[in-house]
Amino acid sequence: MAKKSLSKKKLARTVIQILISFTALYIVLVKTDTEQLLEIIGTANPFYLMLAFLVFNVSKILNALRLNRFFRAIGLQLKELYNLQLYYLGMFYNMFLPGGIGGDGYKIYILKKNHSMKMVNVFKAVFWDRVAGVFALVFLTAVFLLPSTFAELYREYVPATYAVIAVSYPFSWLLTRLLYKQFKSIFLITAGESILIQAAQALSAWFILLALAVPSNHIDYLAIFLVSTAAVVLPITVGGAGAREITFFYLLKHLGLDPNPGVALSLIFFAISAISALIGMFLQGRSGGKREENNQENSTDTMKNPGCRQYPPLIFLAIQQHPLSSIEHQRP
Image (cartoon, rainbow, N blue to C red):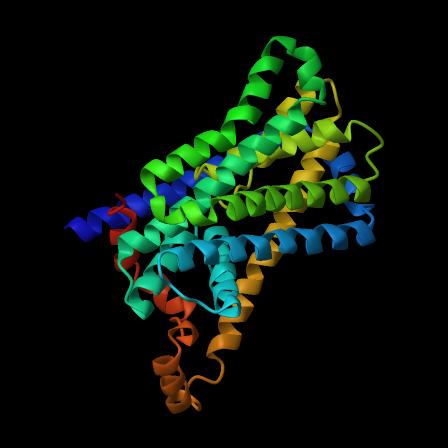
């Protein structure tokens, strides 16, 4: 009965996420000039779009490297290539299997099963990696808001914005000391990597602006992009679809700017994210393509190096959701 109840809850959550995404996209598309929107996207410069795609994936590679530092801090030694494959597979789950097997839940399940790690330790590493990203996002968003039109419109909040910049990382360090002391030794380097990751994503968005030939107010678009990233972090839509678009639409309207380039930026960024997530499916196929003929060799390698262990196919994990359901409901 408990498992059936969890399955119903997961199904309900998936349906709600899909409905929210479709509703948000519907509102945006109804209120925008869709012909102009399609024209803006259709005339985008492919060179800058390619740069945006490359820089986005650089940010993901940096993110995988940061996550591996957290894994090493709990005594989990993974090869960088294996960790990168696992990271992209997690991206695939987050993007294409909403409400079911989350990317973080997938990584926790695989590492617990294949590497004899305690679930709580793997969870701490994955969770604090996420927290590091959130602090960097808050810090960089405040930095971008200061020179934007928002600072001119809301001058009374400028001191508070400076305060956020000043206290965000001291507060992050304090939390690390109090809650996750095992990550103290890597705090500075992971904090630096976190800022680089968010800056790379902002750079990717800027290349999209160049591709769309947006003539001015780039700092406003980038500030809204970072605000919309915070909206995407909330697990209320499918892969962030709709959340970023509706944020761009209403905030650009609030500034008196044309929302069409912002909506186009968000749609293209979502497409880049989706295409990049599909790399995870490709890596899964590459990792499992010769499994049967090399079974004996792989077994030997696994005993010698746990970092090379194979992980189960996507379809297998998609069917057997119960272990991951237990993970999601056992978080400390």
